[in-house]
Image 1 (tube, rainbow, N blue to C red):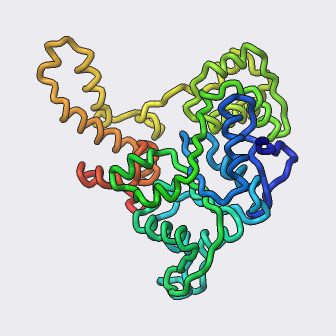
Image 2: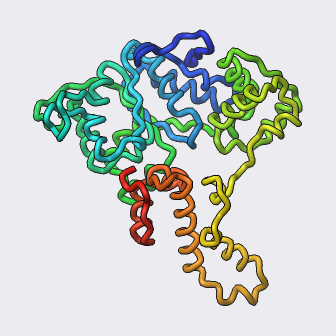
Image 3: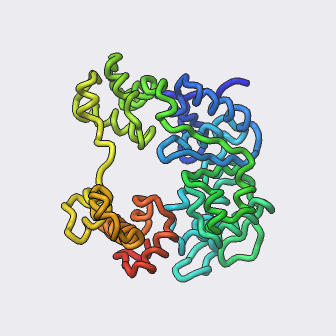
Length: 359
């Protein structure tokens, strides 16, 4: 079986949501990427639903676009939806559409994203963030291949290929009753796991060249600089590497030797209390009490109230995330690695309040 053709700079592009565009971020000769491309080549000619997994920044949307570009639906629309970015009160109208008069302010019929994907590919990113009420409606649409707009009773036929993506453990979400088991099994027809960049270090040289080419510039990467890049753990995956290249170009660097790479790499981790760009207050520095207690002599460990310290640490981290995101729940949940609904429950339990409850 052949591999998916890769479009580099100047290759085929998608315009106005139509037409093929294979992702150049799938380049690389590593075993991990060869396996990904081979799977895409085998699955793309079919209409099988594909569930893409992998850490944030590993290129799941790129893989979805490559699936679309290599499929018989390549001339049709590629409709990409970030489920985590849609406000819950607007999600149904956004996905399924709404007839005129369906709600206050609906002066005309609105075509939803499922309907817009007719004849092409529907990509649902962060599908784990889809509200439970809409999970039921999506499952029915997949089973019947029809939808009903909000406020309408007429079934509308839809024909699209579904590709979904998540960076959370959907099986764990099913166990926690945050994701429907029947929808999970409907999505997981073909599972394709995108490797983190740390698992494809042999591709870094080609990726650096590609990201620089995209800016119509060139970077020289000598062996010592390449070795330093390969020694980095890349927690942000492809997104972090792309930003690194952009940073080098913006700073006028053209040779990435070891010293230059060291200077341009961001620190591995930034403390939560630095996210808001300000020094932590005394109230927000309490989690250090846990580390101080554990680092102290065994005499100090005896009265350690673990539950209390953990609860205080949790409350502090949540407060810091809210401060860093200007009180936005969705962004705070992302920073904390939590689902929005989980964060809302924790806020209620801890008696905390977000400045922007609707977001």
